[in-house]
Image (cartoon, rainbow, N blue to C red):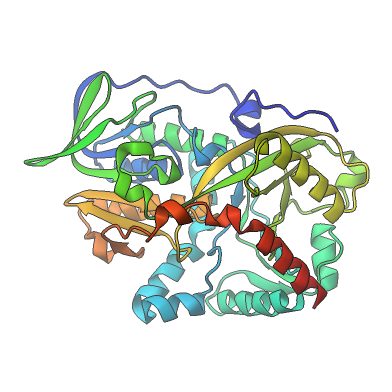
Length: 431
């Protein structure tokens, strides 16, 4: 196997068009809304708030799409990672539960509508997202999941074994389901398109402008960077798992999950025609999630978590590469060409959240493995908040920060429990 390229932040940064550079903040600025973080959440909020006539400044510590936005696999998935509609209603109640379900249901459509409306060239394909079932118990769950979404008018369908194999090209699954409104795209190009659209609407975006402090002042908030300051009536912290030391309390409200991604060299056309002929994205039901999709150059992309140990950056991509070959029956899998990693913010209940940090100061956490669709939709509703709506009236759960007990010990639990998850996957499949 050839060595992977690690000289870029991700495949997407390497293959995207030349990046448009933005200036660093210098001097003082006064705006209605300041946004910390230039990823999907921040850029979508900036675009939608600017379209409402609000003055907006985005402060990004590195470059646009530097964090999880530019390091994911490019899946657009309009549902929740672990929660189905029936569970959400049981947890939140009928009124708030249905509002959150509706929010998620239209999230992929929002992404692809924005791409069309703003002419964003990002290799977008809205052909669906497929979740194959690896065990009989998983199959029952996905059948119920498809039915719950279909009864709400979504383009969700259950798949039998033959349909699953025909759509994915992968053998061994006993069925699954598909949401036809999902899809795939190049996340760096999509983020760049959101940034361009936000600027056209009047937002100002600054790179290399790390926020050092956020302080309460009489009529709002004061944000300071190394070379400038922003006075804002409202502030959104949209850093997800990349907040660093800016707000230590926030960092204790989620589990930071390190996820690796790889891309092979382009597959030969004879093999490519068997796998995902419709170009969908796949994420199965295993606890040790198996995903795959193709990019526009027919590179095969997959990801995975890692068990703690030395040399993970070299070891884990090779493990994912070998797993691709096994699960997709590819004894001559093309060599690994790119590997990269990123951090996802996982909430204990696997739902998106808005965190109340003070009058006019909110943090948004919406990933949980569903970053592109959920964060884009979060930006749209946060623009309503920036325009005067009460945050408690938004469809996402809104509450003060709730630090996870014993967070220092538990923060790495998802990675530490991976061997047990893998064993349970094997036991499920053998049942």
